[in-house]
Image (tube, rainbow, N blue to C red):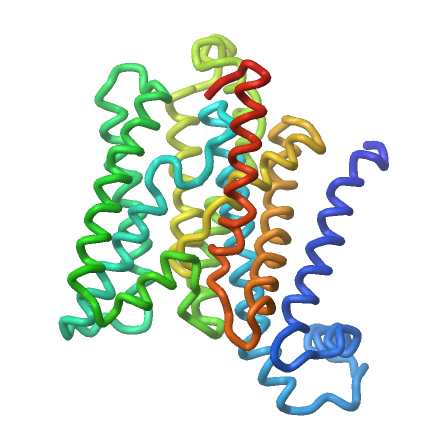
Length: 344
């Protein structure tokens, strides 16, 4: 393979490492990046590289910022990878992980868990994430079942079912928020992309689901390329279309649901990153998927960093930052699609 073939991966890896260092180093207590890298290498290798490292820095880095940074990294990777998969599945540049109701279902599950806790039900540390996870997967199951009722599992039917179920879930969420005033502020922050759990436990809980979902998607790059010819022609080429579509939907929804469950509802990462990767490096999904995963991690890390610094010491929900960037980008993609004659 030519050196140029590795260039996009090297660029994205360099951006990701830079974003990781900045995310851990920046904050109310600024940490020197070089000393930070030396201390991390010490922990990984056992070598003594740094003498002057206050104990307070140890707590800040390894108990607070590093777990948060890794969770944000996993979330961005999951959302962007799932977005690329949905765009391949629907053959639509405007598709994203929330197209078939994942976000609305997760929001409903999370707010329902908050409402139950307000009524005195002890749900434990993971009550809200588990509610979000269950709501997201239930919504995907309902949408896919409704779409399956129509022979041929047309993509349009799947999208319409997602819109209908998403609207229903959003209405129920609004109702629960009005009834649960004590948890209203926390619910709004979560729906805007505000992670509520700290430490390593959320990272370890989300990691297997995100890795499993993204792993299945990365292994399906060739199948996604074949799907771009249309379902009928893909079937003629020997691709088991229904089985592949089901695998993509389940894998993308699993990764998205795990990300949303522990990080809140964060929009537009799954739309912006795959689209930019496609413009820069082409539409081969064997290449586009891993580049989207790397780019999504970097993009959300930088957005999270901006959310923490713009009104410091107060932190904005990262979903506000991604929405401010994603709204105009969505309109630009829509205008570009219509201008090129591809439509929706």
